[in-house]
Length: 314
Image (cartoon, rainbow, N blue to C red):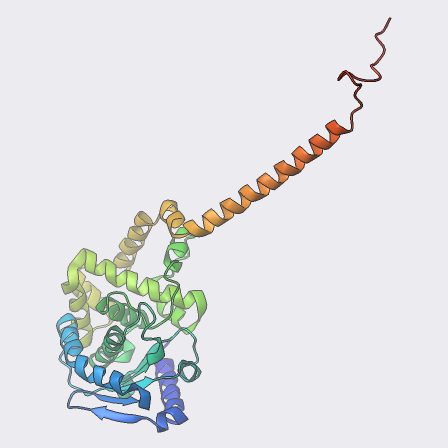
């Protein structure tokens, strides 16, 4: 998705939110660092945001190398249905609007594993930090999402099936989307969207594994100074973006095997195996019944011999 389209959707989202009845009835709690708007039953949650925000901001400043110079606004919504209607998605649990330094959180889902108020707040604040220091046209969507997942231990702002990996499926079927096209997947939904998030996370995690957290911070630093992603990667990692992708793809193939795929889908495989055994047993039972029936229909004399033996040939 292009930066212009992201801005357009963000402003549409904000307009719909500000005009919604739930927003009009919200209360406000604030200090010198953050403003929290919330539905009346969420006063305790708003106080929790005020309490944990300084620590979260300090963590991000250390991890990204930025100093926070703005006071963000957080909106806590109690009704998931209203949130989904505003966000136009059933998968999204939170949303950041960098143009307004605004974070919107579906608080009703903050008790659904793995989401917590603290990690979600940190993830969305990470988006605001990146967009504040890096111009949109220089910040690819996949890099933005990958960095924020890395900063929060892998947490994304969408609901996923934790028992399955669309990235592993895509690797096994040779359907990985290249880095230069990866941001386009965020405009879709379903498996494409999940794959976009998983790939973004995987690439950043690969950079950390091979080049350390300093490699990630180096890329972010160069982009904040005005470099495009490709130049920032070259300066920080001393390899090209294409070389990074090639190495990342190779690492995926090495660690992804049919054995690990079976492990991820063991319950489905066992269910199928059990169904096949049941079918086999049923067919075998029918064959036995048919055999017993054929034996019962053969004529026998009282001594156990045949009543009408065939001619002897004499």
